[in-house]
Length: 509
Image (cartoon, rainbow, N blue to C red; front, side):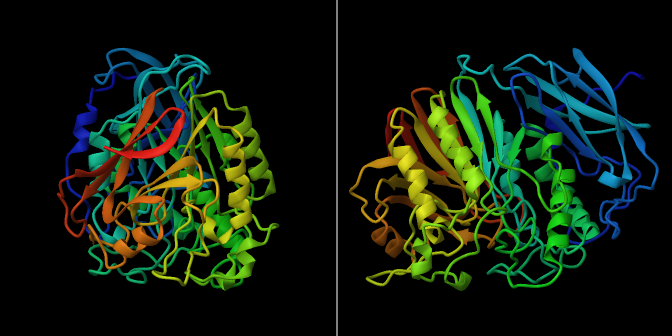
């Protein structure tokens, strides 16, 4: 192998966003950046995808039909002077020339740097790490949590600030990309960028859309900064889909779902066991981090019953309380309950998509709830809460996306009685860009907080959540930026909370 030139990670953390829908035909095949994910004590997944013409309509990114050999390199330092492993993977057209290097036999609890090369082209480098050994003492863990990045609604500045946090791990909780054609989903202040291609219905559509998002240098910086754990929500397929049911009903949804699943796997740093089988892809999984934390990454889309109340947003109806209805599916729910009962780590962290806490959306005596969140699946939520109540020796924090709002909530034993015992806490990250600039408050904020006393914080700005996990406590920081309609916004902490070991309550710092 020829000697590789050294490129620092810091070089990726500068630069501006690519404009709207203009094409970017290049000879360099590494236009989509690099990523890593799924760390365990002995390995990690390294990812890239070759695309010299990323917005090509056929979804192949300007690549021809031939397979291409891609070299990879793993080092212990940013300058790549201490190279530990090298190898070659073959990128093939059937997988849109994506590369998943599934490494093992690495040292636990270590930081590594990686990069790729094909022909004369060298990728940007990435930083990754392995988890501590199961049960081994684990030091502090910094996690950044993100969700909901609508490309048209703004610039991905929050991703760049997330990258500069240099977290140990990133949790992305869904709506990584959006399926709409240009200007089908318009932010309150208007769209500032535009989607390339039509609404995503086919595999080529989804591949093109992922490629457009991944050309964004701020998103590339966030991927290169740390390993990711990912789960999807609805927009990776279609708005508010539920199991095999799209919204609104339309023919051909199984084929669309299968195409979306294939493109998702191709574009995420997932292990081979997560490769789709037709229109099925098992995404729920458990990842350990020494004796400190167990991550339960949940899938609240693929196995759920259809939304109650006809799926009408904010509706209330008896169907919500049907004991046979599920949001996780029976198999995943049993897996989660067994995992919570058997956990031996200090913290159980549930990474999932839609708001778990009760949220009454109508001020006053009348009640209105989201049919798409756990409020539409009351019995399923009660079963999870019962498991949390019966395992008080373990600490559980729920990490959530989807809401496009920052939110901190206490989960009480009886959700309609905020005075009942608190069994867990929930931190909800706002969107990266979805719904545009936002504001610190909105007309309903005061009323929402008054009608939902278990909700301790609610903010309508864009950003992400940073959590610092230690054996004695978790500290959560709600990071916000004032605007996304133009690049360059600063970042600040709007609120922070601490949850102490053995005391499932939110204390504002």
